[in-house]
Image 1: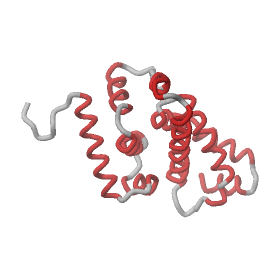
Image 2 (image 1 turned 180 degrees about the horizontal axis):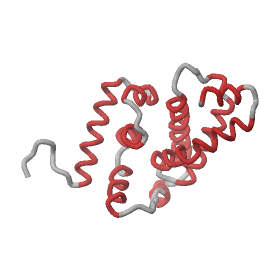
Image 3 (image 1 turned 90 degrees about the vertical axis):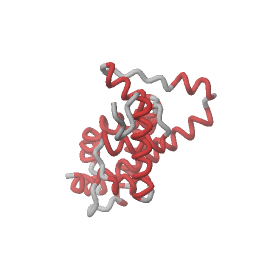
Image 4 (image 1 turned 135 degrees about the vertical axis):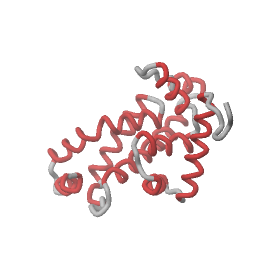
Length: 174
């Protein structure tokens, strides 16, 4: 479906772009919120992502899946916005701004807090793998990493999550 829509966008069909936007906006916002940890930054990243998709739709390779291409652009925009804002906002104020309080049950809130406390190098691969269900190859391509490096980061991220959530090391006796 995306290949057809992108083809129509390349030809200047604004309705096709609107349908793409409607289909991916919520998904993109949730991802951007998890990555940037800030609602305003997430909005900026998502807006710029859709602008880049529109302007660069001619570069999309229809022989490849659309979602990884889209999320590669989204992740780059999230990183760009975070870098830009890091230079503008004092650190103390930045810490206050990342206090996102989602409307989740307590267990989910603990999981959310543990995930958000991770360094980006662990958090983003975990989000893409377990929340968006991408394969390790797709994630490695999106993040421009070797697959083995990605596997190491996923493993380390899972270990850090386990530690933050108070779990037992794998193989230990209770």
